[in-house]
Length: 269
Image (tube, rainbow, N blue to C red; front, side, top):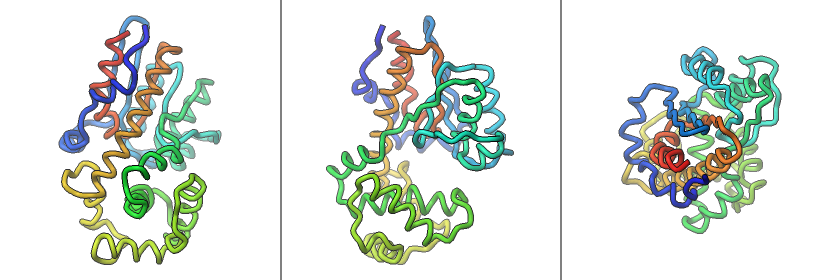
């Protein structure tokens, strides 16, 4: 039988405030393993790492090999590249690279579980001023990952210019001309936050952490996550209708949030 619609399922999700209270204490990968009749769903919540020596990598690989999924749903867009080695896959695309490498060996499909950026932008721009959204997205998707080593050693100004074009303008986000340059972004940051941007891991990053309850940009982050969760639930629901063994690999915050909805989904089969 078909399970509940994603619109109804998202109402069963755990709040991101609640997620924030537990996400640092759970073992990774955080595994939700659900089955009913011939349907079997495993959702693995991970931290995003590009280190092939991270214990999470071996655990995720073992989980995949033992489960042998019919289809895998990943975070972060459709991956079309073929990797020559497991190490190369992880160093370039983290856990998504790993499951792409493994699924290619198995000749199993790997599909994007995320919302298209262009659609997310259209939805979010109806709710928030574009400058506030742009500030949040740049901090959450570029600055903070860069400070955690996600984009190598390239000069940040170079990363910024490429990201604005590829991630935002190409996807339909209305970026003002002055914000297409990093100097313009620094002025926006100063105007919105009240002091200069420092490219370092400092207390300011808490202003953009979706698990924190009382800040403007945290609330934007939560709404972005919930929008993405609703799309992810829809894709899981759809794939369970045509596949018996479905595996999901997403950030553990997302998996913790949608865990109650996943239980509701599988229970309906």
